[in-house]
Image (tube, rainbow, N blue to C red; front, side):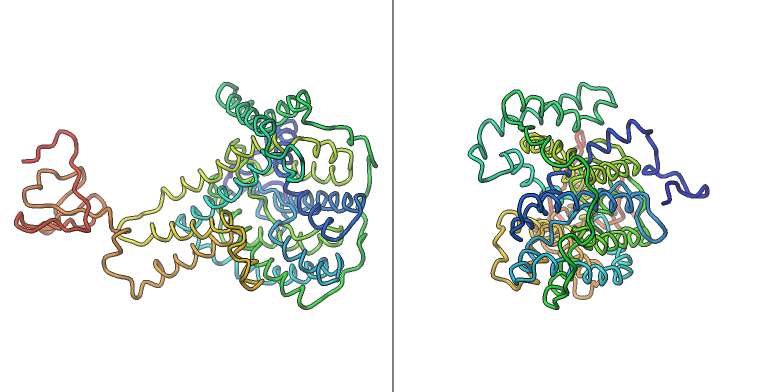
Length: 507
């Protein structure tokens, strides 16, 4: 695998190598951040498939092992595969509903694996189309998507903070939420009072300290860590040879399309956060790595792979941009897949502790999106309405999970994800209003034009800095003409009142 760029390439922030110790520490922090998410899918699917506990455990270790391989491919890369960005890969949650539906048809896990293989192959073939849409992802679109990623992850943090298990008697208890709050407080204190190194490791240190506090409070159980095998190699086709059902494949293709949209958004988001260039070729390499990983995942007993949005938040919080850090995280995932005892140790971290850390992680993603949206020009265009509609569409599946319950399965699969909903709406509206401008009004709606200015003859003394006159026309600093009207005319209703600078006379 390629571990360095060519000598002729410019130095990129993601190519910094922090050394063995830092790579291991920060890599382990990435694993802790996404561990709950990567084991959730095999737990759900194992239960839906009626697997016994030991077989579900094998499903979990397979997903850990495959997530590590996919992360290594994405971060280090080989020719045509891997975007070489700090992105953690793991089993995608977007296909859970579809896989449960396939299990309900009686095909079992072999039908699920067969559908994943064929759909991933189709996804691999169409990645050149997706990689060329990068010009349709300006800050207007990426800002909406990044903000939505953060907002859609907040319920996960709240779920963890409440205990992570709705059937547990202490779910949502004051004890669990207090533990999450203490972990959050530790993160904030370490970020404010610690050195630069401690601040970067604030999430990991807070999780460790929070777990110690939880153990002292009786909220952590390590009794099962020693049970079961210490080392185990992954079994190939352990759950049976794949079978191929047409309906299952068609439904899984829709999942793959959603995964491609979400991964595109994650790649562009992390590129924006670490301030590195992501062109169509790099996006295509990342998508191909996603699809290749998904294609071979069923061999080991895993499912579709995609980038983990919560780890994008960790990159934003810590400022650690190195892809080698995440590659070490991939190595740790592989080790967890080969060492079930280590997996059981990490699994013993109380969800409430992860919830406290998740508040900062996921909130930072949303804040990064807001920062990107601040770069958007909102004057005399429809961009404000595009942002409002896209984020609103992304929030619907979060605030009303059953909103699309009675829609066709293919439609519900796409729009059940707030991330894909926001991405699709933002892309379509950006095309409609900013690329296909035929039919757009000369003056946008009152919502978009609310920042317009006008001047009365008596108000010329109120000119702002940068206002100037060209060919008898008064222009603002951005080159937009400011209408000049007579005192006898009423004030235009759709224009904002001109704000004067302090100290300027109104005469």
